[in-house]
Length: 201
Image 1 (cartoon, helix red, strand yellow):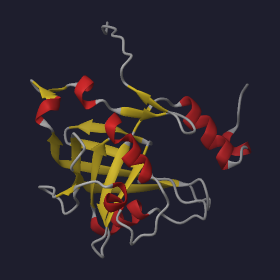
Image 2 (image 1 turned 90 degrees about the vertical axis):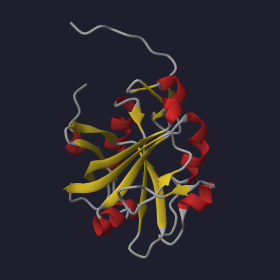
Image 3 (image 1 turned 180 degrees about the horizontal axis):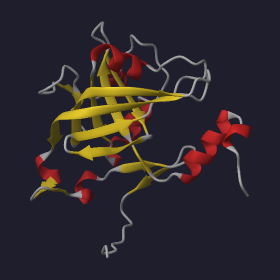
Image 4 (image 1 turned 135 degrees about the vertical axis):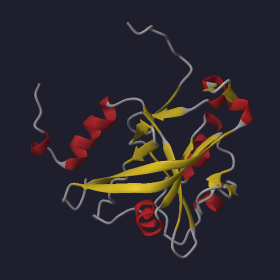
């Protein structure tokens, strides 16, 4: 079957993408509003861009009414954010921060998490997260003009990277200690416990 995305309602296109582009790592993004309110939200459209300079990206879609999410508003206003990696023990707390809450609500408090001051940006990292990337905004690329279904690509240059001592081993991340989880479709998540290796040619 060949599918023309332009012929689909955006929700149907979205379901096809999240059901086949799997698994997706989770960017647990902390920001601060211009009023000083902490914000924390997960995004599964997330990946690496470059190593020199160290650059990562994530994509917040718009709300169904077409408005920008608090995370994007904060980043555009302050130019800073932190991407925290979600380990399995933090899954429930991460899920709590996915709720659509008012801009004046601090998700750190809602989820019972510890905001720890960053070294290079004014945005706190999640103290319970074993890896975090302190970022300065490189650019935002807005994609789509539809009221619902459109999004933005947020690129950030990493200023500092926090790695908990127990996760680092001779310059490499110990995946078994980090226990990262990934996003699947619907309410499903996946663990990184069933792996196999293939040597590159």
